[in-house]
Length: 193
Image 1 (cartoon, helix red, strand yellow):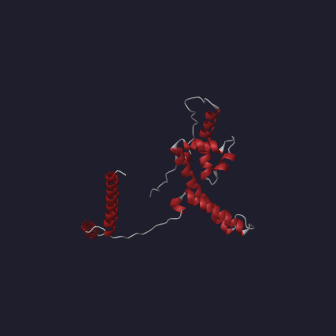
Image 2 (tube, rainbow, N blue to C red):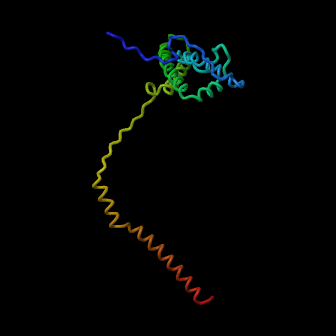
Image 3 (cartoon, one colour):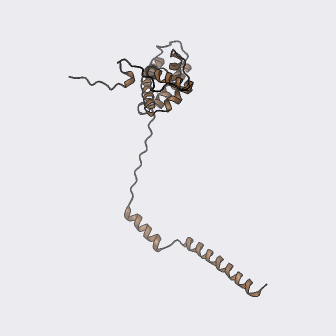
């Protein structure tokens, strides 16, 4: 029997990664910083998939990298964003294991219950945000309506042949006002006063 192997993202592949610098040399300090972020990206994704937050992964990286700069660089390419979302989804799986350890008290047996609850709730909220399909709240609404086309047609015919009396009254009032205004103008204009 052959085992089905899961699809591994390219940044988790065990083959050695070659650093390929951009074809153009950096023109500014910002370009150089973006190249540093590009070089660190796969390492940061591995740390995030292993359970680290982005902030902690950036702090643990040997070269100082700015969070804002990283977000700017990430936002410039949709493929990078997809890779980041995938790493965050894997991190949610790691945090699921941490939640069990926190709840069982195996991680810190003497920790305050309220503190443990806060740690669990925080992880759970982030897990549901990063992996909605598996950990998010699913809200469904069942709506069952039947529409009768024949009844709708009959109602429209009734409205067409029997206009609304209120609409008739409004039209009559508008016609009366216009008629009386026109009449006054003729009366005033005919006397010369």
